Length: 261
Image 1 (tube, rainbow, N blue to C red):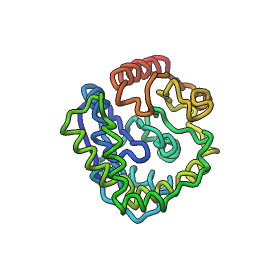
Image 2: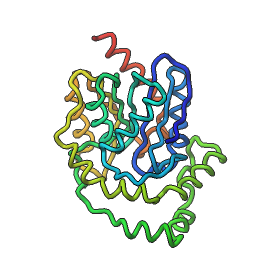
Image 3: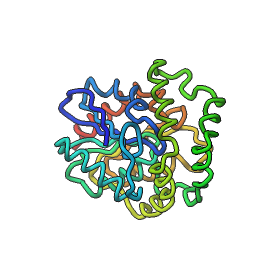
């Protein structure tokens, strides 16, 4: 498992990517650059992502959580803030309940909610595998234009992200995780965040794809006595365009929570 470590702050922030983020260490760069003057930042590249190896292990929530924890144990990281994008909201929910003595807060970046609608869909795995093996997926990406246009990535980083996207986009490990998405969401539906765990959720303000996106997060925030929700106009990858605001408000909210305890 590959990780990126940047910064030397007293507190540690562990970043977990959303599903299909082919190059997490690069994708999170705008956020890492804002966090690292204040924290030690560790970006996890789960198996099948970034420069990490693939794995034959089933991509269940339990296995993914266990592997991330083992990686942090090998780094001798004992206490940290967990910050996750998208489906990391599902994995993070299980993680904080399994290791409550290690996680000091959870921060979601447009993070998934177990009860969000539409997650019982069956994904066309064979179609994705065919597109990848035939080379059609690369062609589709090529004619679709630059997905990072206008974002704070230099040309070299964009090139590396594109290469890793072609390498990892539909590898066997990613496809296996896709196969487990519905069951992983279903398995989390009875779980809640610990009552005394600081919970900060940064949420896309205008999500027309998922009904009740903001209320879902507001309800989830009520699970914690320290729950907070803040919305931003932008796409699902809020850390691409709002990394400065995310870090400023994250630090302010944590200070407020700490002073109110």
